[in-house]
Length: 129
Image 1 (cartoon, helix red, strand yellow):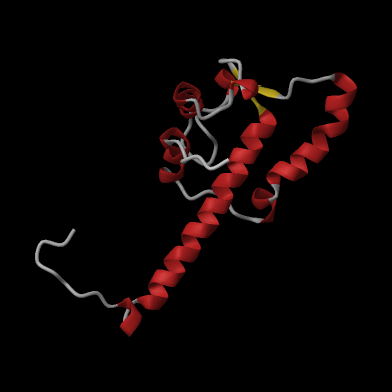
Image 2 (cartoon, one colour; image 1 turned 60 degrees about the vertical axis):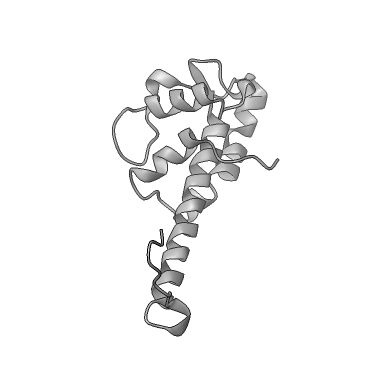
């Protein structure tokens, strides 16, 4: 699967740095394993109701953000019914946000390391960018 990242998926990354601790970076597999027995036993549908997702700012996704992802087609139809989103899909997305946060911080560290070095110089041109 080689698809561009939908804008609705990228939007939550702009509001706050996401947690990138060990838990956040392994959230999907950890919670999938945690829920596996109950899912098999109870035949659960593994979904969060969109109206139950917080609309407060912070690290949690807002209901409006998930709804935008549904509208943009970023959430596969098998993973939502319009009112609920599969919790494992949601945990995978939250892990993606943790991974992207780590990658961005690594990019910023590399950039900081370049500043003031020959590799960090740029020739200034008239009318550039």
